[in-house]
Image (cartoon, rainbow, N blue to C red; front, side):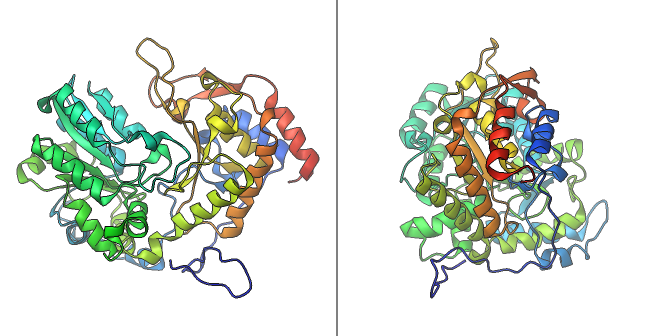
Length: 482
C-alpha cells in the first residue's frame, strides 16, 4: 500500500480495496458491557461475539477474504485421498518457499504438536528467539524446555530498534555450549515475535542464526505464521531488502531453514496450516503423525474449500499492496496514542497495536494481572475486545508460584482488510479516555484456574468494585447508551 499524498488533509493510510460484503456490529450500553464482562469471568475469550463492537482479540482466522479467494472456494476436489486441491496448494507453496514436501495440518498449533511429538524428548532444549504460548506448551508437554534468546532490547517496550525480534548471537553460542548440540531438538525462529508486540526479524539475523545452528548440526525451524507482516518490515526497514521483491525476500528467508511451518489463519488469510520439509527422511519420519492427529495426508483436517482459498491467499501475501495495510493501520494507531502519552510498544510492529500495561496501570502488581485487568477495562468502556499478553498468559512454576512475564501487554489486533480507519480512530479515543482514568482500574484474581493455557478458559473476578466505579465514570462522561 503506497503512501498516497493528500492535497488539503494530513495523509492517512488509504486502503487499496473496497468493501462489498458487510457484517452488522452492535455497541451495547456500558451497563450491559459490565454485566457481560462479569458473566465472562473477566476473560475476554469467554465473551460472546455478538456482545462485542470491535473484536481485536486476534488476527487468527478472522481476516477478510478477497473476492478471488471466495471464488476459489467453489472449485475444490473433495476426494478423501489424492485431492487435486491439495496438490494445487502444495505446488503454490513450493513456488513461494522452494520446498516441495508438504504436510497439511488444521492450524499452526497442530503443526507444533507434530514437530514437538517427533523431535522433543524429556530433558531436551528448544531454542527460540521468543516463545509463543502453544509452541512452548507443546515442548513442555513432551518433557522439554525452552530457551528464549531474543536480544535484550527486544524486551524494552520503547525503542527505535527496527528488528526487535532478532536473536542474540552471543546468547545463542553460549546456549549451544551449555546445552550441547545433541540435546537441542531444534532451533525455532518466529518471523514476527507475537508476544513482544509483533516485532520483526531481519533477513541478516535469520542468516546469521541459522548459519551458527547448522555449523553445530542443529535442525532449524521457521514459524512463518506472521511472515507477511515481517516481509513488510524487511522491505521497508532493511537496506538489503529495499530493492528485492516480496517473493525474493520470502525465498531468501526460507532458504535459511530446514523446516517451515505456519498457521494459514494468519499467513494465507484463511483457516488451516502446513509443515514444509526439505529433507525426505525427515518428511517421512513425520508423515504418519498427520493421519494420526489431523486427517489424511492430502487434507490434514482442513476443509478443502479453505485450502483453495489459502492457495489464492498465499499469492496475495506476496503483494505489497495487500500486506502493507495492517502494519500501516497499526502504526497510525500507535502514533496517535504515543502522541497522547499512552505507553505503547515502539516501534509499531505487526499483528496489532500493543499497550504497555506495566506502565499504563503501574499501580497494579503483577500478581493481580495488570494486562488482564486493562483488557477488561477496555471492553467495559468501549466494547473493544483485546487480548492479554502477560503473566496471565504464562503458566505457573512447578512449585505453584507465578511465573511473571517479561512484559505486560494488551494486544489490539488488527485483522487484515477488516477495519476502517474511523473504527481504529474510535479505539484510540476510548484508550485515551481510559488512560485519563487509569487510576480507577484495579486487579484480578482467579476463581477457576486451569493448569495449562489458563488464559483461554480460566475465570477471574475483580479484587474490588473497580469495574462498577469505572462504568459509572464512563456513563457520566458519555451517557447511558454509549
